[in-house]
Length: 412
Ligand SMILES: Cc1cc2nc3c(=O)[nH]c(=O)nc-3n(C[C@H](O)[C@H](O)[C@H](O)COP(=O)(O)OP(=O)(O)OC[C@H]3O[C@@H](n4cnc5c(N)ncnc54)[C@H](O)[C@@H]3O)c2cc1C
Image (cartoon, rainbow, N blue to C red; front, top):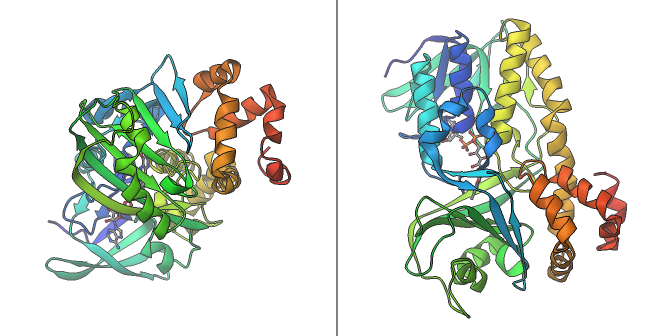
């Protein structure tokens, strides 16, 4: 392992966002150092691996899709707490179930091929701001401690980011816990192009649970996020025995799915980006900057989109400089960043919906005309757009939960 003494850019954290940032900025000719505290990237795998198909339209990712794709997803079964469901079916691929660990590894390999110096088992343990605006990054690795001098520092070190703390930046508005299982089933069959979403306070209070196919008819990833640790624990105990999951697998009656656990991981999902994500010649991206979607917890696409905005700003400013960071800030805040902050209000509404209200909403959305709009326009990364289209078509939907009416003005 060669430790660079000096870099243009040092990135902390080799998750998907750190690796993609390193790849794209190395391609521009900058010297990039990437530090990762684990010996291997992509582990532990705290992810359902479900991403929007359009994510692979981002620069260079078309070369990655075939190496990580497990299933093309064209539909979703959204279950109410009582077991009613909406069968959403599109006539095109809407999402991809991917091998998340492999995704991180492929991005890292591409970054290394483009010139990124990657240091595994190396943890950033502090930073010092220099008078010239750059940073000394203090790290600890297997062979001791050291310092890398860098012009620009980028924190991609996840939801509990220490770089964010060292820079004195605010935390995301809130975080919620999530759990992810990779399992094999003994009976039934995992639908290969459909995901399932399970709602209800006993399953995933304040959020939802999911089942996602993982390549074969017997493998799937199930998981959930919930508003607090107790609800999460209750949910992960109940989910494998959920009758709705058994039904989704094609098992009759009150059967329970028999699952063998391959892996189980717990993580956290940040909700709501802080107001400031830049401090001098440093910035935070991805989960460290709270860039996950408050409505679904998906953080890979928004983080990669932010990297793309950053790279375009660097192109415009002809360097990675405070000017480029300022350009990035305004383009992010007026673009997808705006969608994320509006979604925060939407999430607040969703988290307060009671089980009986979900039953009513599912019943109303089963209307064939509304289903047609959902199937045509549904997009896991733009739920607000869909919600507004539905309300425009059927304004009476607004009255389904009258206590939400005053809050709607923050969204519409
Ligand atoms: C249960 C669960 C399911 C999810 N499912 C999905 C999904 O289906 N689709 C989706 O889009 N998103 C999903 N997410 C969210 C997604 O996993 C994250 O948004 C994504 O991993 C964020 O990437 P990142 O690179 O910003 O951070 P991370 O993936 O968290 O990577 C941060 C990296 O920084 C390293 N690091 C931290 N501190 C240091 C340090 N001091 N020095 C060196 N290295 C450091 C860590 O080891 C880690 O490798 C899920 C999250 C959870 C919890």
